[in-house]
Amino acid sequence: MTKPFVTPPLPYDYNALEPYIDEATMKVHHDKHHVAYTTKLNATLENHSDWFEKSPEEILMNLDQIPGDIRMQVRNFGGGHVNHAMFWEIMAPKAGGKPEAELSKAIEKDFGSYEKFQTEFENAANTQFGSGWAWLSFAKGKLIVEKTANQDSPLSLGHAPLLLLDVWEHAYYLKYKNMRQDYVKAFWNVVNWKAVLEKFLKIS
Image (cartoon, rainbow, N blue to C red; front, side, top):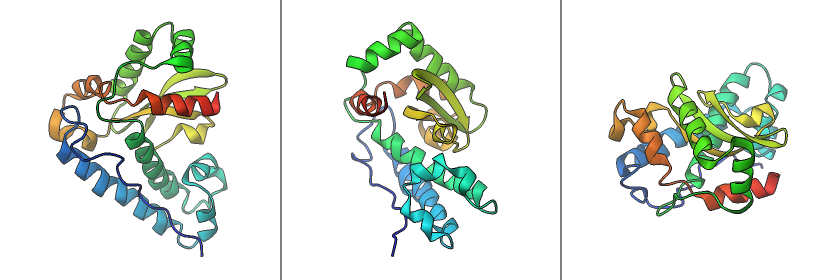
């Protein structure tokens, strides 16, 4: 019997990203929000168990093949599961700094400089109206910055996501209140550029 999807554990302690992302937020964000998305995705697909043979990423890449009566739920819950799993992965304690090697060269080529990329990414995160995500993705042979609403994923557009920032209020409100821009700035201190580089090397 094919097993349902599982919420991956955090790859570090709840307080590991302090002072930039607080322990209380990480506990609620991972243990409540992420777990809820995974649980609801499994429940939605319960009567369509053949989809459990696919990875959650493959499901998001083939939403048009999902039965129409559950497509929106799979889009929302599947996106919530996949996006959060990647979010934990591309952050790390004692991280930050700048990208290196091939990723650094690609950012300079496609954005002009790392600083210009940062500005564009921060603008996407700060101008996403309501809930959503900012992304660094690889599409049509180049790096792009994009933003999506709710739990939508670049995977559904045929893009390859490399870096993402959650700008749902639950991701930052306990610590930063309504100051999303401060949270966005703080994010650079926890970016695990090694993990982002590994993703880039796999798809470029």
